[in-house]
Amino acid sequence: MRRRWCSERRCWRRGALAALALISLALGGCGRPGASLQPAVTLQVLISSGRISERFNRAHLRQVVDGEVADFSRSNPQVSLHVRYVPEEEVLATIHKRSDLGTGPDLMISRVPLALLMAREGLSQPSGLTDRELGPLRLRHLQEFRAGDRYAALPFLLQPNLACYNRRVLAKPPRSLAELLRVGEEGRRIGLSLILDQVSWTGTIFGAQDPLLRLFDTPVTEPAGRALSGTDRERVLNWLAWLYRANVNPNIQFSDTNEDLAERFMARELDWISCNSAVIPTLRKALGKDLGLAVLPGASEKQPAQAVARLQMISFGRDSSAAQREAAQDFALFLLNDYSQNVLMTRTEGILPVNANVIVPVKRSDLLAAIQQSESSAIVPTFQRAVGVRLERVPLSRLIKQNVYGEIPPAEALAKIEALARSRSRIAALGSELPAGGRRRDPSAQD
Image 1 (cartoon, one colour):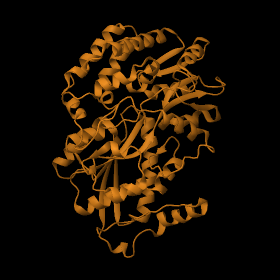
Image 2 (tube, rainbow, N blue to C red):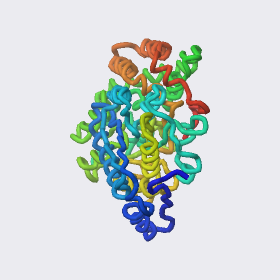
Image 3 (tube, one colour):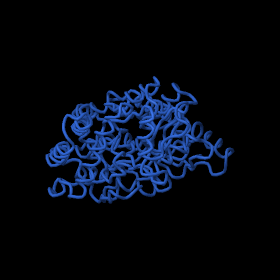
Image 4 (tube, rainbow, N blue to C red):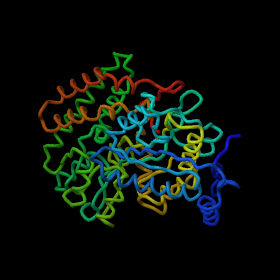
C-alpha cells in the first residue's frame, strides 16, 4: 500500500455536527501518526488563470485556489505548495520551457481545451488515481476523460453560463428569446457576447448550435464532416441572419469580451447580459440586491437555452518524482473530496461542485438555484465535445463579429466558418484525437 497524506477523507453524513467534526479532521488532525516525520515534498502547481483579458476570472479563480491551498497546507505541513498563476495564452510555452529543463509543474488546473492540448503535447500524463480511490467521490463527467484504465484529466469545478439582470429595471427576466427581443424593443438594454461559444446559445431555438459544435469536433480523418448538411446549413444561416438583425436594434449591443459586458452592466449601461457564473462575486459587489440571475432564454420557460459551460480540470505533470506524484494525487483528492467541494461552493459564489455527494442548497440560495438550473441545461465541454470551437476561438469570433456588423453577409460568414473547419491544422489534429479508450458522445445529448 503506497504512503498517503490524509488520503482517506470520509466526510460528514449527519448535519451540522458531523460537518464540524469533519472540519476539525480536515484542518487539524487528519494526518496519519508520524506524518511530521515524513520528508518534505515541494509541489509546483500551475494555474491557468484564463485569458489575459479575463481579469474578473483571475480574481475569482485565485480566491478559489488560494483558499484550498491554505486548507491543505494546514493539515499537510510536510508538503510545500508553490502556486503560479499563468495567463491561458502563455501556459503551453511556460510548461514547455520548464519541461525542457526537467522542472515542469507537478499539477495543473485549466479549462478543458487547454487540458486537452497539454495531454496531446505530452505535457501532462494520466492520473494514477484508481477507480477505487475516485469512485466514492462520484465525480460528474469523469468518464468523459477516461484514457484506457486511467483518466487523462480530472474534473474539478463547474462554472455555467446564465443571465444576469438588473432587478431595479427588469421586474422579471425574459424567459424566451422572443421575449428578450421584445424587452429590447421596449427600451431595455441587452448585452450579448461576440465570442462564438458564449453566444451560440442564442442558436438553440434555430437548431444551429449542435451542428456548429459537431462541425468543429468532427475528427480531421473524416473530411466529409467538415461541411454542414443542407438542413443544418439552413439552420445556421437563419441563426447568423438573426444575429445581424438583432444588432440593428440599438438596444441590443454586442461586446468583444465578457469583461466588457460585465463592466457595462456594473456601470448600469446595460440592463441584461449573458454572463459566466465566475463573474457573479464581482457583479454582486457592484449591484448588491439589484443583481438578478436566471437561466438563459430559449424557446420558452420550459425549454431554456443550452449554453456551453466552463469546466475546470486537474492535470498531472510529467516531470514529478515518485514522492511528488504521490503528493500531487493527494492534493487532487483533497480538492475533490466532499468537504473541499462543499467549501468551494459556499466560500466562493459562482461555483458548482463536480462531487455528486455534495448537496447544492437550492432552497436556501436563489443564487445557487439559478446556477444549478443553468447547469442542468448546459453543454459541458469534454475532450470530445464543444472543445473545437474554443480551440478556434479567435478566428471564429472574428467571423461572428463581421457577420453581426454587416461586413460580410450570413452566407459568406457560413462559407468561411466551414472553410476554417476544413483547414484546421495542428490544433485541430490535437483536438480531434481521443485518448485511448475514450468514447465519443452524441453531441445532441444533454448532461
